[in-house]
Image (cartoon, rainbow, N blue to C red; front, side, top):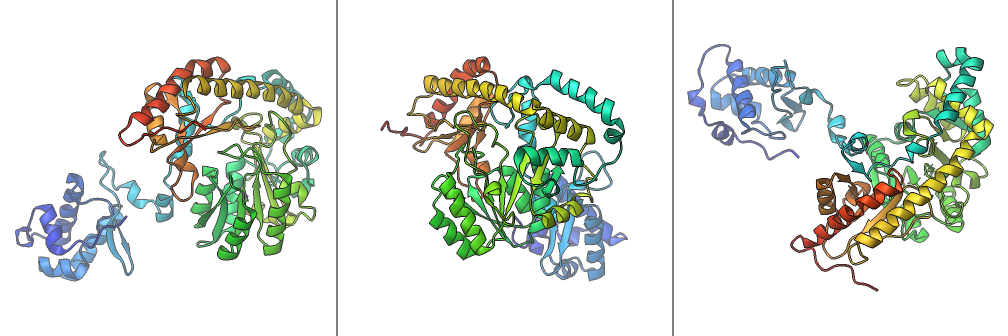
Length: 502
């Protein structure tokens, strides 16, 4: 955050010089540039510091205002400061250590700096680290990916459609892939837009539907990637408590904030694992129609049920196909490396999204689309899903058993999910999930605190554990370390008492 205005006296005091001590050699503006650069290098001028107003600095140094303006412009050209009309000039970066011609951070746009949360990137990086047992990133059991079936499908595709695989394709996606998705998941082929994973879909929807200052109601807690996309478009986020799922509360929020859209993850929700009922889905859909608020329905975990199949999607219940935008991906059912997902929506929205998409991504990878169409048409996808659900059920049960054995109910509570990828854990007393994360990291385990999933900074006593990424054997072996991590959080001063046993 910008600091208070730096007075001239405070400015020179921080730098350890007086205006009268400045050498008077020409050009004088270079002396001012060197002075600021030295203060940055020594750390006495920090990012966000507001420099003295041009007139005040000119008066103190007994130089013309033009000299100070020239110095500030030189510093801005180097990426070290940034001027804002009506606000002043602020330190935006520190000098690069490798003698670069300017500080790149100072050249980055304000909007990009506001979106500097690297949580998702960190989760992906940790998932790749062989030294870390990651329960943080949300991935399916990739060791159960149907490699032989995929290889056979690639051979069939290249024998039959090699030219299509190697050429440019339609921005909306190959028609064979769109038709296969529509036939398997619902809707019409021309209502389907193929995207490079659900995250690209969220980014497109945010850029298409949101203007800076618009309000978006999200389930609370919610998927952190959705928050990043909506905030990147300038949205104000308001949370609807998905665990309480009070439809009257939702209507009150719709009346109070008049949101641009409603984002929901209603089936095996990320991060809580909760699924809302058919009755509640109908009520939510009725509110959206009444108040003319579109719903973005994120159904990325829909196919991953482990007990009973979930209720119908909002998209399928939206008979007029006018309110709900359906978002889904093959990242959670096949593999995230394929980078194929889709949006199903009204044709007008698909057309507008396609125009946005072509600016940065002409089309999704053709070969992957052709293979996925083959998987869907041949039944390979559904056969794989049956095996994947069996394996995920084993892993869920192993994680539940490990936590019950090594982290008693006085340490952590959770509800066994009926599907999806996650356990949502609740601590008691004043124990903090960040302490659990820190302790787990010392044993080369990765979990993610709940604060990342709230639009308002809550979630300090909650954390998400992905149970699908590791084998039952590795989960069992990690149980003692997970138990120690939970216990450690309660040993921190002020963390007691534990959760009472009901």
